[in-house]
Amino acid sequence: MDATTRTAISLQDAMEVAWLEADLLDSADYDPWLALWTPDAIYVVPAEPAGDDFENTLNIAYDDAAMRAKRVERLRSGQSVSASPVARTVRLLSRFRILSSEAGRCELRCAQILTEYRRERERMHTADITFVLVRTPDGLRIARKVVRLINASDAITGVSYIL
Amino acid sequence: MTVAFPVTPVLDAGALVGEDRAGSTLYTDPALFAAEMSRIFENTWVWVAHASEIPKGGDFKMAQVGLQPVIVVRDRKGVVHVHVNRCRHRAATLCEVRKGKTNSFVCPYHGWAYALDGSLRGVPYEKGYDDSLNKAEFPLLSLRVEEYHGLIFATFSREIQPLSDFLGPAKTWIDLFMKQGAGFPIKTMGEHKFRFPGNWKIQLENTTDAYHFPLVHKSFLSAADRETEDSWDIMNKGGFVEDLGNGHSVMVMMPELVDLEENLDAPIPEKFAALAEELRQSHPEEQVRRIVRAVGGCGFNLNLFPNLGCSAAFFRVLQPIAVDETEVRHAALGMEGGPAAANRARLRIHEFFQGPMGFGSPDDAEVWDRVQHGAQGAAGMPIMLHRGLSHEEVGAEGRKRSDVSAETGMRAAYAQWKRMMEA
Image 1: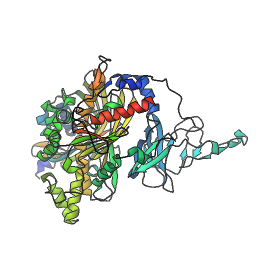
Image 2 (image 1 turned 60 degrees about the vertical axis):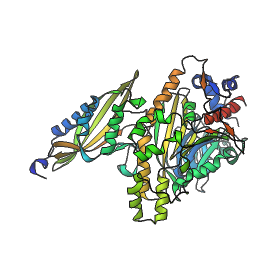
Image 3 (image 1 turned 120 degrees about the vertical axis):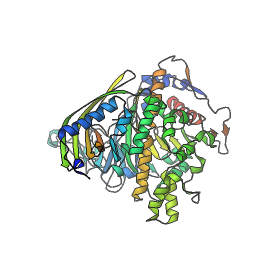
């Protein structure tokens, strides 16, 4: 690791990555979204509010790189009736806080309020999001994203897009 | 004890179901829905829990029988009770915790306290009743409870047949289904819950609907690996649907995966090669093969009327909410005490298809939503249920059977619906 990848990540830099990711998803701009992750990153939407042993627990989504690519393909293919068309979304991220920071790596927590619109229905999903961000030679990348819906353990409707 | 006020009689309920079709007001009529909650859900065995959800004394979970909230609890002696979640005093729920462990249930309103078996043990400021309160007269209302192979059912009816008779030939299929424990007891490993704006019977039909699979689940099949895609080529594998009586049916999609303890010498699929290698570090080859074969689940869906599907590798639980709103729960299953790697593999398979963000469930929910919406049109036009009827056969035990994509299972469920609604 060279000096540039060991520099601490500022709150401003971390927020910019989170906002960029949010904007890419809301704009359905998936190629740069896929490129925003480290190769071994995991995207998780837990099914229970507590706990963090995601690998050994049932999740709503638990995506490695291959699953993220499949999810994008599903949204693009037109084969999924629930994603044809894909719901339009607008997500607002705020209440950012760096939970921990070390050389070239930080954990960022924020709030997300997302409104989904599809087939004459508007729905809202509210979540705490935790990002693990790392510096790489190509810039900041997401090493982990955990989306904790506040009602994760309740029944929710189908979500045929990426939270 | 009377457990329900009479509902408005729906005189022509039975007329809505013909041999090969049904009236679409089955999905849309609120009066019919109210009648179903009483005539069906209070008069049959309703699945409420799997034994592994409440393994020890004091363990409980909340459930519903029809629209009625119940508590499923195991007492210190190991006996499972199902109580209506309603204080005998002024009706407040005793429990709003989904799952947990307790010594008693205490009403938050006036503090009436009940033992796990439902008996009333304590009443605060009892003096106010001038010694006239006989606690023995006010136990929680408890349902009849019976269990088969870890499946716990309850009923309000004191008259209906024992669970074993109700399940009948379905028991053989439950036995086969539980083989996916690979010798370990089956345990639930969490559940996905989602809702769709449609009637509960739309989902009941779907558990034995192979016809939709290659169409609605095209995006799942495209995303799956080649072996998985091939194994889901269910329209061309000689499967069948069989009416098992009492509204139950089984749909065999992958005949090669009916009995998971057979064909253990078959080559291990490429998709499980890494898992098999990991298991070989700690298990003998024979057990590795047994576990690996069980990880993918069974090749059939067993539909138990009215609310449980033993569906390939998971439990599908139906919860009616309103005439046009249904909650569906998909409980993941694993091997109690089995290898963590095998249970992880099962979790990932479950997440791939099921739940609000699965590659399958949201598409199912979308088409069921479309059924409910479409059924608002041309109310007099029937829902067609005649697929596979023209080549349906009656087997040795008198059970109807047709090809895998036949609507035999739906006809079985609606025949039971009709019997119960006319009774």
